[in-house]
Length: 501
Image (spheres, rainbow, N blue to C red):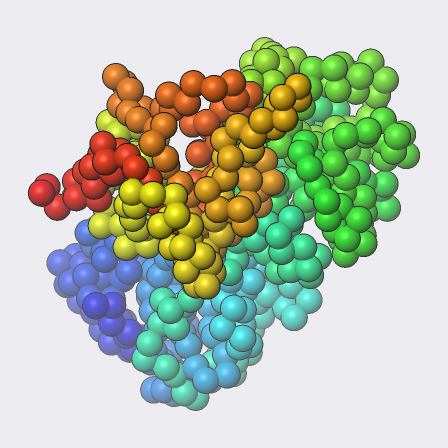
């Protein structure tokens, strides 16, 4: 249990100059201890004491009470708050620094802006400060999101005369911060989204680059598309003509373009409208055909072009056969920026997906998978009824893409549920709840990898298609196994591995 504390109480502990006593305080009141078991004394301890010494004589007892130390959001977004205080009308956020960090004032301002955005989900006034011990000064993020020097008198006056004993951020659903421009276009247009510190750093690096070809690389859920769209907004606001090309079907492109304010088009026939664009962004470029890339290079050498790329999301043999972009990435012809942290899905979901695809994967922890379910049915008809039931509770059913042969008009890999979305139709999208199907053709091969023995001609990659479907889930996943007891038993092993049953 994390305990709120009073500043006088903290000062009394610190002034004893006894390391074990301060460590005992940290064990009771510092979230860091509850995360990692680390109660060691840090610079924040000293910075906090020095701040308290400056302001405590002018503060009321109430103003000195109700503080939370070292709270960190670890689900999907990675933000740590040095000092938080919640009241009925506002939230006080104080960052404690011993000196100006390497990223300078811009980095400090960016951190407070990110914190303000995250805390704003509680629909209260956000009061943000940073205390820099080197200068013995305090700075405030203004209403216009600019960092300004403040007086300690102003700081004290901004602290409410009431406080709430609960850390209200612990009840927040962090999924609300992660959006897809394709499925939540209005929210994106209203800038109701979050860029992590890592994304922000990469964005600044990209905008300072002089290269004409830049690739944003990362696995599913790392935020490539969001970064691509955010960069597009940056250029659009500078008055540049912006074009986003999506490597797939995009039936809602006209509606998206109207809402966002610049063109978002499917890659097909891009030659018709690329000439007028100053900056081009190509999303899901792992599906870009070789002849399309060659055309771009031969005709638009001086045009600034960005790519988002993830080789694991190639879902057809044609995708795999296109080598031009991957060669340029491999030999560093293009400037590469890699996003590493998955911000869409929680860690349990990420671990389960990796284990489902490869049973003996060794870089994932074992969990009690609270938001994941597996269900077994013997027949398709039983499964259809259950999928319809799950849809009532907000699940999106995703199945492998159907293929109809050109000469005989025969349907390959027909969907179990006619209303299911197809893999090719959900590329770049994300959903809160997803249900996927593993039928009798799936099995685990000698390398403990999920594979398929579907014998008919089928031009799409089944394992990669399942990966695409799985990684559309933000929070909840339901796996339905049909007429495949061996796979069901293997999945049971994933669920009970933590319990060692």
